[in-house]
Image (cartoon, rainbow, N blue to C red; front, side, top):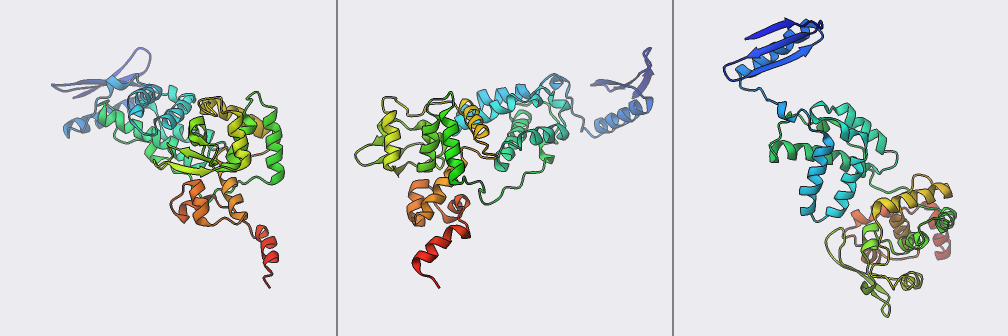
Length: 330
C-alpha cells in the first residue's frame, strides 16, 4: 500500500510498504511521487522490483578499477587492456555513480576522445564500459539495472583502410621534430617503425638478444596474433638496433609516456591526425611501391590474408605513373 506525504520542506515523499519491504523516495512534485509509487507497486506485484540501495554509492571508476585489478591480469592482452582502462580512469566520467550513469554521459565521453583516437579504438573504450557493467551485474552480483547504458551508444564507423600516410616531406619534418624531443630515442623509434612496419607493442618488447646481427633479422615472440615471426632488417634498422644493443630491451617505454612525446612531436611538425600506428601503414605501402609481392610483405607485417593486409596499403594512381612509364605500357 502506498502513501504520499508532504514534508515541511514542501517536497513529497512516497512510501510503499509490503510485508517484506519498505521503499520510499522523495520528489519535488506530488504527481511524480504518485507515479513512482504506482510503478513500484506494479513491479512488486509481478516480482519485478529490483533493490539497488546497496549500489547507490558505487562509482563507475570503482568498477573499472576492480575489473582492471581482478579480470584484466588473466587475459593475454593484459598490458594493452590495462593501458586503455587507465585512460578511461583519467576521464571525468568515472566520477559518476553507476546508478546515475546515463547514455548521454557515455556519448559525451565518446565525443571527448574520438578526435584523437581511431574509430575502432573509440568503440573498444565504449565496449569496455559495457563489459564492466555486465561483469559487475552478473559475475560480481552487484545490483544494477539490466539495461546497460553503454548498449545504446552507436558504434563509430570503422573504415576498411587506414587513410593517413605521411608524405616524404612530412616524414622528414616529423623526424626533425622528434630530434628536439626530451625523449632521446624518439627519432630512432619512429624511424624504426617506418622501416620495419612493426607495431608499438612489438617494438617495445624487442630485446637485444632477439636481434641476429649476422643474419639481419629480428625475432618477434609476442605478436598480436599470438604467433612469433622473423622480420628482415635493413642496414639502417640494424644500425638503430646496434646503437641500443647495450640495453636488455631496445626501446623500453610506457605507452602513456610515449604517446605524450610523440603527439608533441607531431604538433611541432604540424603533422595532423597522425598516430604512431599509422607508421605501419607507411612502411607497408612503401614496400609495395618498391615492388615487393603480397607474400613478401606479409612476412614483414605478419598478416595472414590479403583482406587484412590491404587495410594498410595506400597506393594511389599517381604512385603508379612512374612504374607504368618505366614498363612502357601504352
